[in-house]
Amino acid sequence: MNYTVDPGLYAIGNARAESPVFVTANYKMTFDLLRRAVAGVDGWILVLDTQGINVWCAAGKGTFGIDELVERVESSGLAGVVSHRRLIVPQLGAPGVSAHEVRRRSGFQVLYGPVRAEDLPAFLKNDLKATGLMRTKDFRFAERLALVPIEVVPAVKWAIIASAALYILSFLVSGFSASKATNATLLAAVSLGASILAGAALTPILLPWLPGRAFSTKGFCLGLLFAFCALLLNGGLHHGMAAALSQIVSIPALAAFLAMNFTGASTFTSLSGVRKEMRFALPLEIAGAGGGLALWIIAVVTGG
Amino acid sequence: MRTLLYLNDVVTLAFNALKCTGCGMCLAVCPRQVFRPSDGKIEVASRDACIECGACRRNCPSGALDVRAGVGCASGIINTMLGRKKACCVVDDDNCPSCR
Image (tube, rainbow over all chains, first blue to last red; front, top):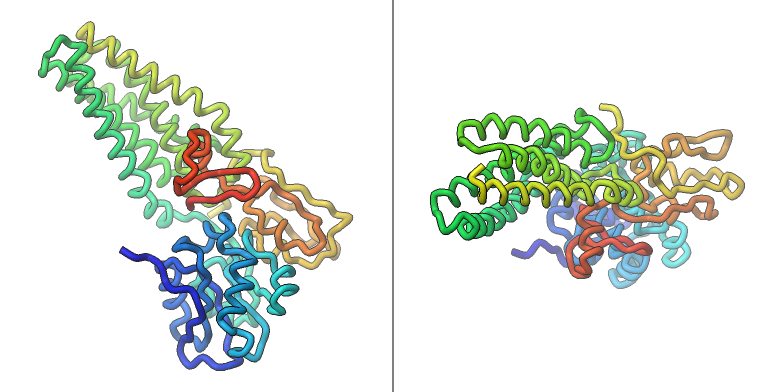
């Protein structure tokens, strides 16, 4: 599948020389979102080559940047197409664009539009001024919910691979007993499943209501809750003390790790903050996962 | 809904009030309402809301704002630690790619 749009200048509606110019990225979803948002507007869309990446990410990478913008203005011949010298750049493109720099190099004035394309008609009506709400990137329930599959699917893939490896391992250490290996793998799969549910699915959804500021803390708390739930489930599987401890140690640690990975998809974390969080959380998460694995092996070997 | 905040007192945002001309570009580019107008200039109103995206630094024509820009992405940091340079999400200090 091709998710890119050819960079360059596009006309929408009855575009004229005085119509506004909207700058965007060449990720197809971004382009379509913009097109839908300004469906009733006569104007121009200047698509930058961001290698198929959305505006915010591309701005962070620098591909949605000053050089690309200035060169695209030139190569598209925009100055001959429109009579004004204004570019409406999405606000989330600002990390890659410098308005005064663009003006100096191209003669075009950069006007930062709203964060969301859907606010563009209101922005146009409001004399090209964005309100505080249009300027703010939030992180609402629906947005977090939509990100859950992106967190869960790769985690489940890893969990399947891990379960397969753990089956082989338990088959070997249990003295080639298929029934013991199946039972042990089931135990591990419950731990992995509970961790994913807590850390990759529920932490994103419940983010504002979970205790702590660090994502790992939030994931850890839910993980602990799920570890006790898994223990109850475990009671029906007739596992012993080592198995129970393995779950208590590994589920919160894995859930914390998965929750920590959600920092990248969230919209309110900083690099300095994530570095600080990782300094205390990552060693504990590795220790918890390692300890859980060791206890699980003990459980398989001793039949406990 | 109230604004979600990440860790306290950790961001590298630095504001030099002496250089500020009060042009308001930072107010226009900040997606987290970190700044507010004050006495013809601006002030930092909500420092912990800053996500270090770097938009204010890049768009401040008088160089009054400084921040070590980057993306708060744990997998990016892990990819960098593991030396995976080509992964979708890699973090380095100067120009920080993202995976959002």
